[in-house]
Amino acid sequence: MKLVEVTMHELVMKMKTPFTTSFGSMQDKRFLVVEAKDESGVVGWGEGVAFEEPSYTEETFKTMRHILEDFLIPTLLGAELKHPDDVFEMFRPIRRNNMAKAAIEGAVWDIYAQLMNQPLANVIGGSQDKIEVGISIGLQSTDEQLIKTIQHYLDEGYKRIKVKIKPGKDIELLHTIRQVFPNIPLMADANSAYTLEDMGNLKKLDEFNLMMIEQPLSHDDLIDHALLQKEIKTPICLDESITSLEDTRKAILLGSCGVINIKIARVGGISEAKRIHDYCMEHHIPVWCGGMLEAGIGRAQNVALTSLANFIMPGDTAASSRYWYEDIISPEVTVENGYIKVPQKNGIGYEVNRAILEKYSVNKTTYRI
Ligand code: OSB
Ligand code: MG
Image (tube, rainbow, N blue to C red; front, side, top):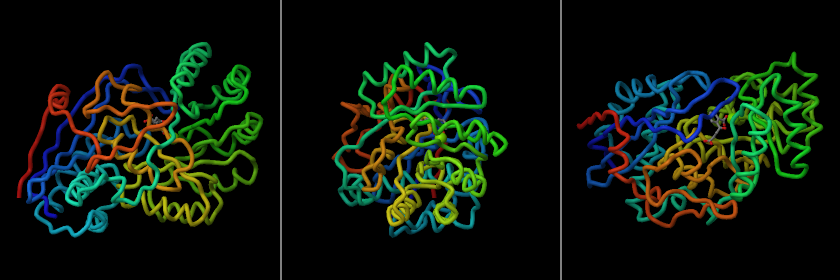
C-alpha cells in the first residue's frame, strides 16, 4: 500500500439539537473527511472529529488540520505501508495530536480492508455480527425535558441511558430520573467536572445503582481517580484520561477505573484502539465504544471496532438520525431493538455519498506525491 493522493474535505453539518456537556454546548459540527487514494486507485475514508474548542481534550479542528497538513500527510504520502499498524509507528515521533492521527489512519484501514476484500470489522478481528448500543443524552434545560428525552430513546430501543452531570446538576437530577425509571441501565458522565473536594457528592452517586460514573475528575488524571475508586462502589469509567495503551496499563495497575470507554480518535487510531481492547480483555476490564458526535465515516469505524469480543457493554454509537438530518453515508446507520448490524460490505461497510458530502463541504484541499 502506498498513498498517492489525499484530499481533506472540510464539512459543516448542523445537528438536530444542541449537545450540552459540563464543558459547553455544540450544534454546528465542523469536521474533516479525509479521502485517501493508494497506488492501485482504491479510495479509503477517514473522519477528523476534533471539536472547534479545546475543551474536551486539547485538540481543536484547526490544530488537527495543521498537524495533518504539515506533518502527517507529508509523512504518509509515497511511503510504502505493509499494514495499517505501520501508520501508528510512523507517527510515533509526532507527539500526541491523536485525533489528527486517527483521521488519516482510518482511511488507510479502509483501503487495506478493501484490498483484502473484507469488511473492516473482519480485518481487525471482530467477532460480533451485531452490536448493542446505548445513547448519550446532553444536559437539558429542564428535568421534564430530560425525562421526555430519556423516554423517547427508550422507545427507540436503546439499551442504556447515559446522562451528563456537573456540580449542581447531579444528585437531585439522578434522583428525579430514578423516581421515573427505577430500573433502567443508567450511567452518568461528568466530563472532568469534579475534584476530590467534591468527595461528599461523589459518594452519594452510589445511591443510584449506576452502571458506572464516567470521567468524574481531571481530564489527565489517573491518581485521584484511583483514590476516588477506593471510596465509592460505583465503577469509574475513564474516557478523557485514556489516550494510549500506556495510559491503560497505568490506570489498571493503579486501580483508577473498572471500565474503559475507547474512542478511536482519542487514542490515535484503530490500531491503538484494538491494542487497548486486547489489553483490557486480558485484564478483565470491560470496554465500550464512546462517540465524538461523528458523521457516518466515524460511526462506521465505531461499529467495526465494537464488533471486537470485549465490547460487552452498550456504547454511544447511535443511529445516524440521532444527530443528523442526513448522513454522508448510505445506507445510514440504523438501530433496531437496540442493535446495529455490523455491515458485511468491504472496507468501512457503507458507501460515502458524494452528493451529500459536497452539499455540506465548505472547502477541500488535495495533496499528491
Ligand atoms: O464524553 O463521551 C463524551 C460528546 C462530545 C464530547 C464528549 C462526549 C460526548 C458524548 C456523546 O457523550 C457521544 C456521541 O453520541 O457521539
Ligand atoms: Mg465521556
